[in-house]
Length: 261
Length: 274
Image (cartoon, rainbow over all chains, first blue to last red):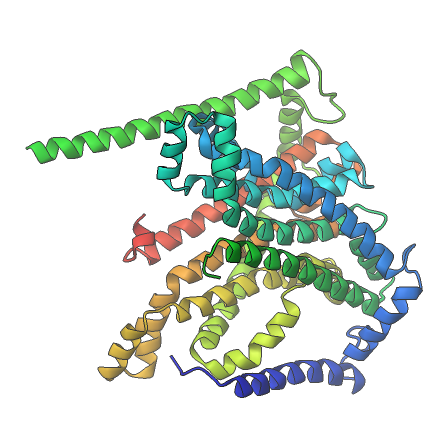
């Protein structure tokens, strides 16, 4: 393994990498090697993003589409967390629940979340309910798995002490298992947010009449490559912000518990 | 003798737990099937327009396999999707793992490539689908491109982390013994990074399926996602269910295959044996 690079070297090389990437992206369409219709340059895409903030495309401006997507995301994500975390804890505490639910859960897990789209549309329509089910399908498994793992890794001494003091099942789960598995749960929430956000984009590509995904499909149908790429930028930025917020939360919890970051 | 008895006891205990688990698991699945019959057929609580009865499911399965649906028969759709996954997965892993190994080994390469990755990574693979269709149309090439995006990133990241996690003293020992660079890579670096690489491959495989199904739902002419798409437009719940089950079975099957490969390749490591 090579020795670490100094900070300056890292920045310089990183700059070279990004400059080369943007440079090639810029040069290909401007020199006409690739048609700008096919691959618009970075400047064109940036301009398009700015234009889209005021000029509506596919029924709304870009910020409005983002707002639609984000509302759906939050609802589906909260639903997954509110059902998934308690289920994971119950599975971690009652062995019989674990043994009954685990095989069903394992079976469902192999079905890609996006494959729920037709049923989601059939059951809940394409407005809000359908996409929420898709986000739920994406975000639910990591919530359950991490709450379960967290509950299984609780120090047995804590459980024994609580049992000896006559703690009931409910209090055991809410006051021993839940607090002890918070770090694992928060890590799971981060994974869930990533998967949920990506599932939402997929769902909006297929069934929706608003949202960033819908805007991209409309742009694709109109061969508006720069608008498609603006959508990709928006999705990337929002995903990054969601991840950053959860990462902050995770770090804060770990610090409060005196755990290494 | 005493020791032997003790071992026997542990083994039979483990077996008992396993058989208990199997019985309860099978019971749970049986319970779901009974519940399915009860809710759709016997009591009719769930209307047929929302979820198929077992008989409707069976008819749909027969229809797609014997007469064909959405242009071809079930095994043709399934094979088409499976083949796309296998081809794209091999291409993505074949390009991603070497790049990850290079980034893990060479600090300069890492410093140059990492920021580009940071720019592209937040865009989920599914968001590439419209662009892929614009660039390459509705055929297989667009699917290969999006699956490549989905499978490439986890392969790179985990290969890189795998190299970083190799015990430094092992590398130093190999160097001290004068191992030539090629042998060092083939016999120390690659095997050392393999367990992490396989972790990445599993993530890649899952992401590949999600992406392929989504891509086929958005636009395709054949494949399991296309079956789902047509069934959705026809409002045909039984066929939707057939499509979903097929996606699940194929996903399970490829994960199982990858597990077999992992076991044979990693037979020397603790994880391969487990």
